[in-house]
Image 1 (cartoon, rainbow, N blue to C red):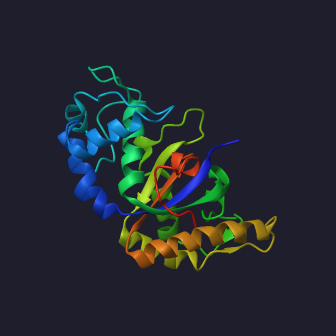
Image 2 (cartoon, rainbow, N blue to C red):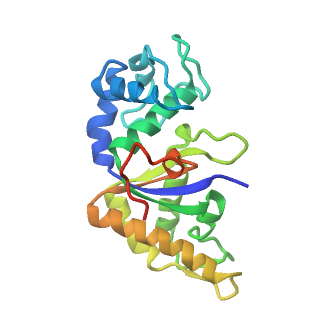
Length: 225
């Protein structure tokens, strides 16, 4: 069980420069209005008019990591937390993601990277574990899954953190008694390949569970690596 883990090359600078101001401006901003209009063609993800979006976005911190609102709120105009998450993910997919790879089940993916005492993965440091945790938890407010499956956006790294993460990945190795080390190597190989693409492009990383891009890329031209 669990959600599919999706690792993306993520242009965080563009997110901060374009998406954050658009969301704060509200539903009449051209980027927002266009995304709402596009959603009307989708069978399952039609968005409402999102009236009062600017008021809701005023409850967030500067980089939209957290809000003073509890999850599962309903806005005065009647739209919900889940619909805001759909809009948010759609905007990031369209404007800020440049490549992605499906790593495998979300839980198992991070078992390949997190180094713990007496664990199966060696070569990690406090910094590498902190970077993994940032990818895993930094966007917890936007992680929509119930039942512990962590669907939706989980976390991100900026471009500088991605450079450090790429370096840390080179030192990870399976413990001698790891069960099925070939499986570990295959999964980490996919992660390293995507991370290196992000590093060379000068962008960051985004990690999520069951992101819709993994199931429906028809509106986008983002390559799967």
